[in-house]
Structure formats: structure tokens, C-alpha cells
Amino acid sequence: MKDGDQQRDEWRATVARQVITDYLGQWLRSANEAAVAAVGSEHAAESARLARQAKQRVTRWRDHGDLGGDTAVLIADAVVRRMVDDEKSVQTVEKSDDSFPSFDSSYRAAATCQWLRDQGYDIPLYPREPGM
Image (tube, rainbow, N blue to C red; front, side, top):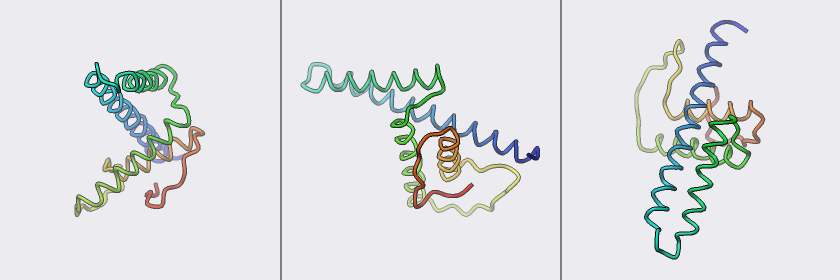
């Protein structure tokens, strides 16, 4: 593999790991906030369970670098959904520079989905997923 190809693969892996960490962190914060808001309500037990589940996902990722198939698919779905939402809301005219990877939502979605597949997770091909 050429040095440039290896560097691109390293960038993609770094972006994918950061995207995964960010999504897990967002889900944990949201679950914790929902659990606090639900204290004393009929939804308290379910909210607490979801917060524990989110914490377990973060811990599994942080300590073992493992997501489990269900979490990997949820993340892939989320990054592709974000890319589609961004495409609908933002029309940027930007010249592509192939010497340095773009970090827009399309690149993050493609890098994350491909990295998850490379790690052995069963991630579907999405109709609107960009190629690498």
C-alpha cells in the first residue's frame, strides 16, 4: 500500500472512531437527561434502564473497542440519516480537494460505515451512502 493510501485509511479510521465516540456520548447524555427528568414519574424505571444501557455501550466501546452488532447498526443509521438531513438543509458550493479528506457529514457517514464493515459488523449498504 502506498504511503498516501495508508494515510487516508488511517484518517478514515480516526474519523470513524471519533464519530462513534461522539454518537455514543450524545446518546449517553440524552439518556441521562431523560432519566433525571423522569424521576418520580411512571417512566422512571424505563428511563433509568435506557441510561444504564447507554452507559454500558460507552463502556464497552471505551474499554474493549467493541460495539456489538445492534449498536453498530444504530450508529450507521444515525450517520447516514445525518448526512441526508444535511444534504436537505445545506447547499454548499465547495471545490473538492483530494489531497486532504473532507470532514463533512457525507465523508463521516462513508468512513464510519466502511470502517464498521471492515471491523466485521453487518452494516447494510444504504441507498444514499457515498462511496469512498
